[in-house]
Image 1 (tube, rainbow, N blue to C red):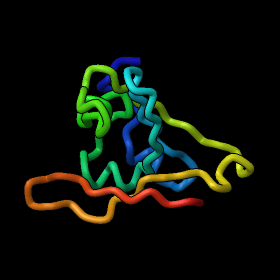
Image 2 (cartoon, helix red, strand yellow):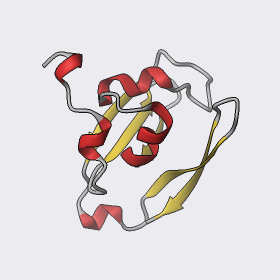
Image 3 (cartoon, rainbow, N blue to C red):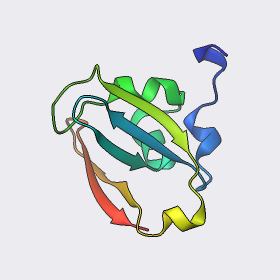
Image 4 (spheres, rainbow, N blue to C red):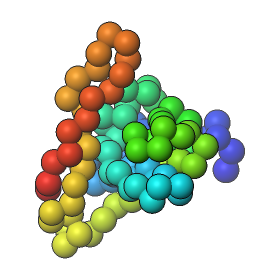
Length: 100
């Protein structure tokens, strides 16, 4: 499946999926709700999301990967998810980690 026909964020904004963004360099793993990323990045495919981000720890872009995950209910308990709290005029996202 090529990028143009890949499912987009809007397809996964029903609350049962999360977007996991990993940094292979510093081993950071973050979870985001697709509806927040949709508001920030627009209706792009999941494969294109990592290109829109930079690792907050090592400040690199080239080590990031993005995947869709749908964790079972048992794993959601205590899971830390980043929620979009505001978008500043310079289009800098401000996130807050919450426990589900």
